[in-house]
Each structure stands twice: as structure tokens, then as C-alpha cells.
Image (cartoon, rainbow, N blue to C red; front, top):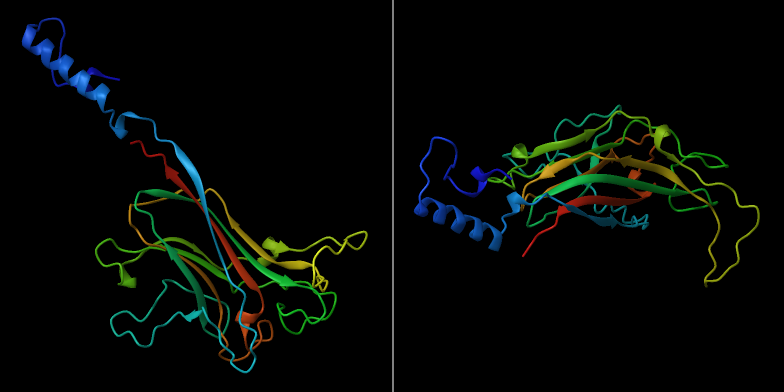
Length: 258
């Protein structure tokens, strides 16, 4: 560490050295040793993971798509668009599942993993419609992943949000999740017994994104899929019922010293 970090007194050839200057430099060194500032310590991080998810509502009569919202808020005059730059190769609109979190100290967004889980069991509740057995999740480019950080001065004004991640137009075949058939039936150890079927779906993983976020910055994590307007062959009339979504968000938090 340079002496310039400790005191503004400089001792070198050609300068005078007296007791007062030495005393002041030693006093500053003592103060620094008694209370080492964070800027003098190498930053170390610890990993924290938050897990979000839900099971879609299967009540056909109600046809509720909670907690998905349309990307356009028709009740807002100032800023009707919840999300920026949405594009999808479909004639229908989009709906989004959004979850948010905040920290009282700066953090780094490290990893994001979306698991869009389906099942290949006969009559399973979470499947894309119109696919005959054996079930295989179809390829689509109509899924989007967004990450925003709200404005520090206008956190409720979505037009001022900072877009940190905007992933769209990708093939879900690259993120396909399938299971290998078991050589034998597993032992039933729970009641009621598992009805059968294998987990499938899409597994979208964004690694080492390394996005710093300021303290108290609200982080919005968004998954977008087509909505129900104009039935599509691939998604059906209730797209939100085709899979059970789960999000695992990994953050790096700096160690804080007392």
C-alpha cells in the first residue's frame, strides 16, 4: 500500500522532516489500522440463490392466467409498455411472468436458470397441445428472457428502467430437457404413488452474466411467452398452462465487515 493512501505527508530526499510531520503520519497510520476501510480490503463475494416458481392454475372454466400479465398495460396513460424491445415471430401478443427482488447493498447477477417443466405422461397437465406420443417438447423461438433494473429516481416509471439482459429469437431445441427411460420401475416409497411420466421441457441457463446492481436497485426478472389471442397451433388457447416454470437466480454478495 502506498504511503499516499495513509497520509498526505510525503517524506523523500530534498524535503524537511520534523517531529510534527512524523507525528501526524504515525497518527494517520494508527487510525487506519484501528478501522480498516473497505476500499483497503480485497473484495470477496459469497453466493446467494433465490428460487421462484409456481404451478399453473388448471381450472379450465376459469381460464385464469395468473400470474402472467400482458406486455401492454392498457390502464396506464403515461407508459403503457411494461417491457422494452419485445419481438416474437407470432401474430399474437405476449404475456410475461415477472418476479422482482432487491438488496440493501450492491450485488452482482451471476446466473439465471429458467426450467420450463413439462411431462410426457398420458394426460399430463403440463404439455404443449396437439403432440402425439411419445411426447417431445417442440422447437419454438417465441420465448424471451428479460432482466431490468429500475431507475433510482423513478422506480415506478418503466420507461426509465435499465435493460440488462434481452434474450430473444433463440431456438428452444438448444435448451431441450428430456429424460432417459429407466431400466426398471423405481420402488414406490410415497403415497399416493407417482403416476408415471418423465420430466421434459426447456432448460434456459444464462451463465456468468456478471451484471453489477447498485444497492436498493429493484431487479425485475421476466419470462415472456405468447398470449391466448388468436389460437396458435403450437401453444394452444391457454399457453400459460403448457409448463410449470421455475427460476433459480444466483447473486454474488460482497462480504461485509463490521
